[in-house]
Amino acid sequence: MNDLIQACSEPNKDVDHFNKAVGTIHIKVQSGNLGLVQRKLINAFHFFAKDNPDKETHYVRRQDLLTMINYNSNNITEFKENARKLTSVSVEWDYLREDTERVWGVSSILSEIEYVTNGIIAFSFPRRIREFMARQEHRGLVCMQVQKKFTMSYALSLYENATIYRENASTPKFTINELKTLLVVNDEENPTYKQFKYLNNKVIIPAIKEINDVSDIFIEPIYYKNGRAIEFISFTVAVKPHSFLEFSDVPNITSLHERLISFGCNSKSALDLIEKYDIEYILGNLDYVESQLATENKIRNPMGFFMDALIKDYRTKEPDIVKKAREKRDSEAQKKIDEQKRKLEKQNKIAEKNRLFKENLKIKYDSISESEKIVIQESFLADMLNSNTIVAKKFKDSGLKSVMVSSVFYNYLFDYWNKNIE
Image (cartoon, rainbow, N blue to C red; front, side, top):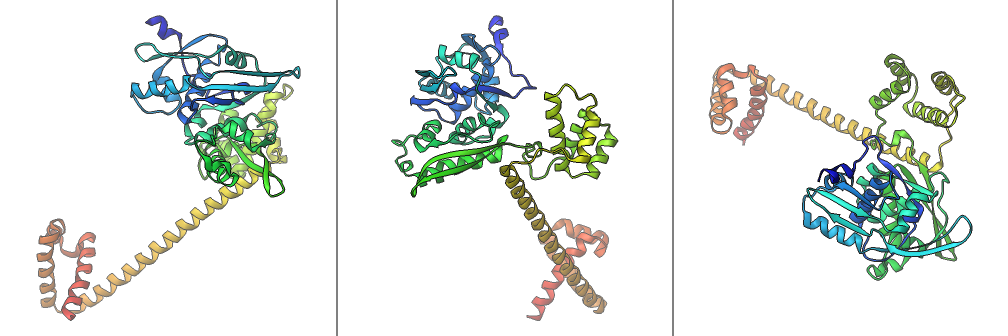
């Protein structure tokens, strides 16, 4: 038992991504169902096996596995059913090797899953999949934190296929049938998807939206027509700047402050920079400097280089897709600000109306005789004893001096006079 526990792969809290071999992404599902849970599970298995891809059998704690895919269920029967579906998936690959020879093959996507004991799971990949994982150079970066956020299998699949090309800024052209294959769109199960307009509206556009909303990349489709029909489709791909990775409407000043400190600024200098420069401006130049430090060994004074970047603006020119996303985000943020302003203005108008209403009632009440006031107060107290004993007690103790009591009293007074007039 202890040997099994020690053999378990454990998630590294500092690493939430892995480079997935293209041979395990560009695959055609021949049989079985590769739904959202199955896709997330297979990626989690790849993640746990990434440090020892040649190893035949891996072990992982079931709770670590389910946490990795954000799956909240202790139902063992349900887990077994998902595992059963996964081991029944067979896939085909057909690709051009570096030496220009074509390679074709077919295998199961996962050869074995075994629920061992005490919440420990053993899993094995087929030989060819292990070879892809260990030796294939062309890879796509898959972020496990991003994967948790996906709610559509098509979106997760498109994300994996697009992330391969994040350095190229664009995917190759796919025929519509090739794209269906990559996204595992089954025309037999979904005959309406034989028509491109339904495929586009129900699969492609929603998948793009989810990728742009929750992932670490932006993508945008490019359609290529042959006459009136769409013959090919490709996707522009851009890595999201850090300011978008907060997944919020406004960049987080606290996290930027912490990032500047971790880079080398002291707290006061970091605050001064945030005060002096626009947040996006700082983030863009910081991204550039950090990318240069990662590839250049000649930079002897990183902080000096960063300050020079801020003065001269070394930011990499944003791709159009990022620029459009930023403009959209800024526009939506402004709409929210405008809506908040409208609400505040409305609240202020209501408050002013209530103030004038109370003021006019008070003037009228102050002008009546003491005997009339006593009649009204006795009527008010009787009503409160039936409907609001807290206000009644407070009225007995301090009369109209209490703000709470006076507010209720003048509303009652308005109804009292209207009723008596009628």
